Length: 294
Image 1 (cartoon, rainbow, N blue to C red):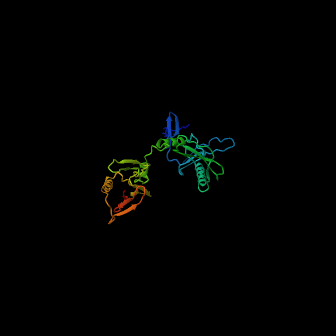
Image 2: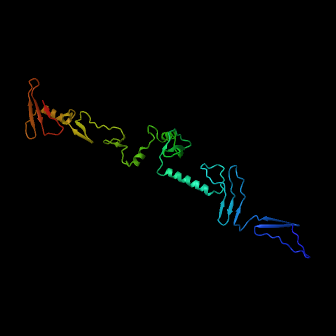
Image 3: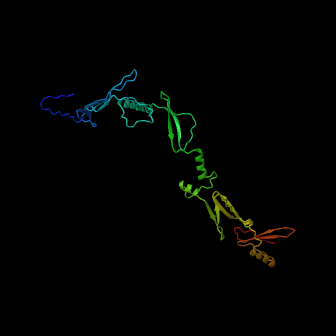
C-alpha cells in the first residue's frame, strides 16, 4: 500500500525497462518480464527436484561466457535411438564419449585388427550378400556385417552363360574371337580348281586327296607340304598308240631289214618255238619303251 500526504497529491510513475514491463489498473500496479530479454548477463533456472538419493543442478545460461551449464544429457549411447531429437544440443560430456568411441574403433582398425570371415552359409538376396566378419584381436569378440552389392547368383550366372553361348558353342562367331586375338589371317577354308573345270569350295577341316589315274604312267607323292608329280615310262600303255602300231605293221609287211646304226640298236632274242625276236630301239625317250618286231 502506498499513501502520500500533502495538500497537493504528487504524481507517482511506475516505470519498467528493456526487460521489465509495468501495468497500472486502478490502484493496482503489475510488473512482468518482456517476451524478449536483452542485455542479460546470465539466467539461472530453478534446480529440478532431485531423484531419491541423487542431486540436481540448476541450469544456467551465461551470456558473458556464452555457455550453458547444468544440462542432464551428459552421456552418449553408442546405439543411436530411433526417436533421437536432432534439435537437442550435445554436451561436452557426450562429445568426449563420442570422441573416445571413435578413437577406440580407429585403434581396432589400424594395424591391430585381424578380421576373418565367420563360418556359415551366405546367400545372395536381391543381388546383395551380407558377410559376418570378426576381429580376432577385439576384446569383446564383436562381429561386423559387411555387405557386398551387385552379386550375381549361381543360377543367374548359369543362365547368362547358357544364353550367350550354349554348351556346344554352336552360336559363337569364331571370326569375332579370332579378330580380338589378332588372328585376322586364320584360314576358314579354300577353293580348288583343276584344268578347265569349276572350282570347288573346301571347308575348314575337310581333306583334299591328290591321285594319279591308273595305267597312265603318272605318279604322285607328298614330301612334307610338297606334292610331287612324275611319269613312270614302264607303266605307259602304248597298245592304242596308232603311230607305234603303224610302224610295227609296216615292218611286218615290208619285211624290212633293220640295221643297227646311229641312234638305233637291234637286239635278237632266239626262241626255237616262236622264232627269233628282233628288238629295235631308237633314241631314248623318257616314258617310252622299246619297239619289238617279230
